[in-house]
Length: 116
Image (cartoon, rainbow, N blue to C red; front, side, top):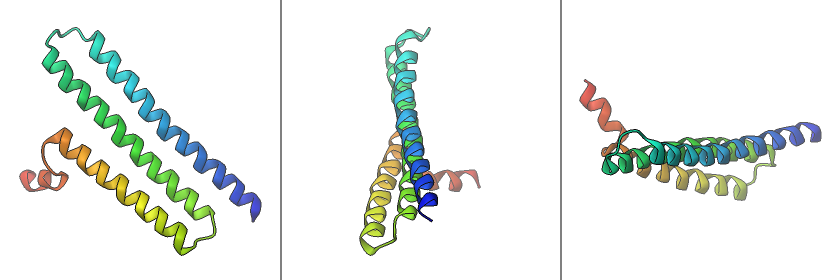
């Protein structure tokens, strides 16, 4: 059983590294597009930079949440570990929601109302 915990913990660490790498690569890509865009309108480029940065952060946060869930499942579930996981997921969900509102200008559930 310990060998399974070891591999799942290793997998959770790998997924966490992928989440951090996703954010980092997204930042590099965003600045590359910002500085080397053919379009010269700086206002448009700034908006585009914010959009790309926000999307990479959102994707990275989702991956990091998955890594936290895997890491918590590996450990012996206690009230403390589950509570810490719940707080981390709650904070990252609020961050994701606020980034989504910042990027789109509306709440995610407002899209469904407009499509009907």
